[in-house]
Image 1 (cartoon, rainbow, N blue to C red):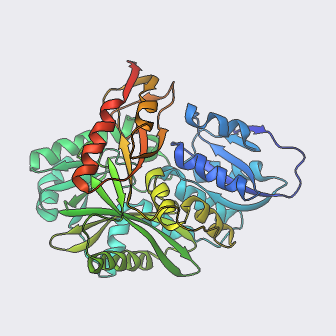
Image 2: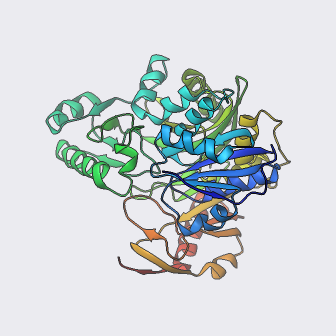
Image 3: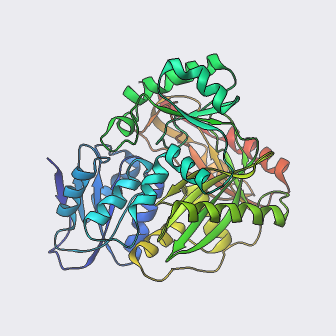
Length: 436
């Protein structure tokens, strides 16, 4: 039974934007603020998770419906009907990977057919997305599903090593592992299957909306080359790539430590080739009237190759802010506008110099008491803004990425100077945490 909280006055046929949330705070709060700024009422279908990062938003929503499983389309559809009763529904959206396809399906069930749900559903199944891109003739690494420990040697031979092992419909680099041998692949398979069955995000892999059984993982040949990301706006069949962002600082644990726009030392001819590949991928997948976040590696052999496409939502907060600063496009506002079918709310770029977003991650696990050093970081001459990614009371796990602090910087000279700045800033921040 859904738990309904009504903070609205008498329903007045105003337009409501319904947000479906599973996990995450930053992008969700940003999208809600854009909807409010557009004059829309806010309805929220929320899962059991009420972490401190969204407490204020949940309390200020016009309608809040709490459901047991936000990844269940039937359950969310019924909750959506309750949340939107008496309002004119403008859009159903999500920034949570686990519920972005759910939101698209609910929108169709409630009569909003401007944005097709099927392509968004395809991109949530990373194996099916690879198949579609391969059928369109786009460069792909070797890829295969691994569903049984007895298939390890066969899959390793088929895909090649080194390889990347990941959940088929995962989120936020959760459980992504690089393996270099058959024994490592066997160990990674056992680890992922156990976590998908009972780990902190197990509901993504055991719910009715999961695309494959929790005993199945995706294995892909590891791409070698520079990594980039890009948000794309698709409006009435027109595909518009936004800023090409260089993921200049990556490691195997946290993956995304730093982003910079424009990319360091990237010839324009190469940048255009990457953009063209992204456009081809979006077209092949059939995505329309939405925003998509695309990850790309410029592989030394294959050339530009899509790592994954996340349709129905923009990238996380760092790409969002970088894109807005350098292009004037707020991708949260753009997502809202294109789904509602209203004009794009664009402004002039705010900065014309190179800008970077840095993520500092916690190295300990437990319940957060406090994050110290933010004021000191803010005083650094290169720092534009500082945002805490963790709030007191939140739980940090090493199972998936939860950045401790997000920092926007400018004024760096080159890649080496920016990496040095990253380490300087990281040394200023400490996390007070208690084990649980």
